[in-house]
Image 1 (cartoon, rainbow, N blue to C red):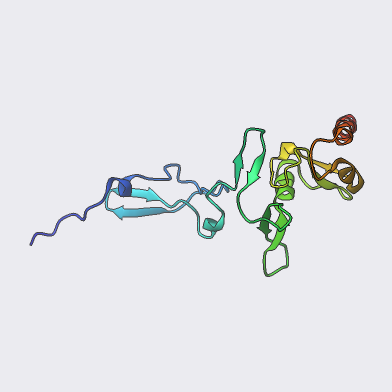
Image 2 (cartoon, rainbow, N blue to C red; image 1 turned 120 degrees about the vertical axis):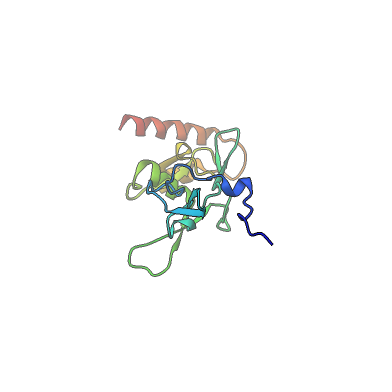
Length: 163
């Protein structure tokens, strides 16, 4: 019996990460896998970075909302686990707050995040706005369009843009 080169499928020879950079978005290079003498592939993630989800966390819909696809709190808001300094475990946090902080920085003290689109599962930072608790309550209504709410949204947008 003649021993030869082991069979490698075409997919095994294709480098799924030709850039050689970690796919979690950290920008650091990954190690190289040597599958068979001349076949060189890169790992998709650096060690420990694989836990960062590679699948989409939201789905973009026609109205521009980014609907959260993963875990949700019982009230319908997206839920994400975040590491907290000094804590042994990750803590749950509202997904829309995390996306807002990634895009615009920390939420000003005394303000909460309001969904301008009125969609609880939306994490699009363009649809999120920091407002007071009172302003959020004035805008909110459980069903259908509300002229008062629309006026309040326009008023607060003008105040925020002017200030």
